[in-house]
Image (cartoon, rainbow, N blue to C red; front, side, top):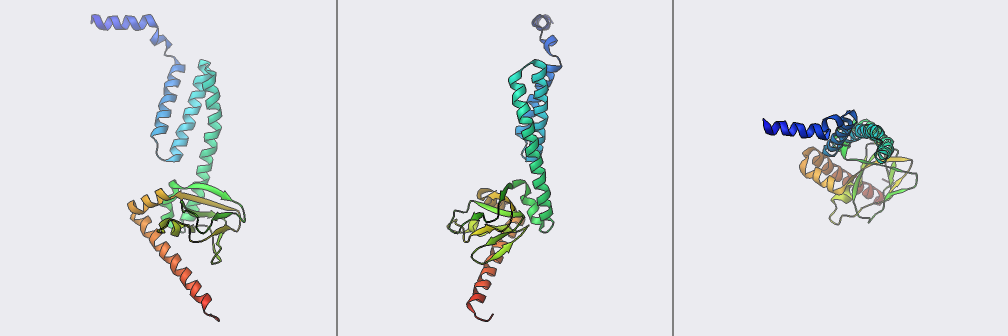
Length: 224
């Protein structure tokens, strides 16, 4: 009991309990939210928690007159809000496309959105295949065969699985295009871990190769 009383007297003399006001509580809460943000694996919950932590740190910085903290999180807050809106917009576009092919829903959280103008080259024949692409809006054309792909189409999948890891054709944007890209390491991991995605990609590669062979065979035969 004597030791406990001594500890309480020490705390009372230092004024720790008196200093633990709402500002300190907000600061601890903001720190906890930052920890939670690092713990999140999905991007949308991560951004939402980051926004909450920004708001808490703004309140903490304003209440405690910690202006560097206040300025930093006042700048980060609109940036995180913008990124969250972009992610939600991407999710809506992907859901629209995924209704046509349910397998694409498994790829949604892994996509990085990109935009291209008409005439821009998505990739050229012989380029290293570092990503797989899903058309979310607009249309692209496979230059060698003249084939056009619209929303929901997957392009660049053959190069990802090619032995030399290079693109087998050139893809050009015909219109303003919105693309979801997935890096090759993620694609290969999904292929080995998710049987549904693996089967889908295998069938897609075979389908594209057969379609290319048929088209070339028809071009070699006059009158067909």
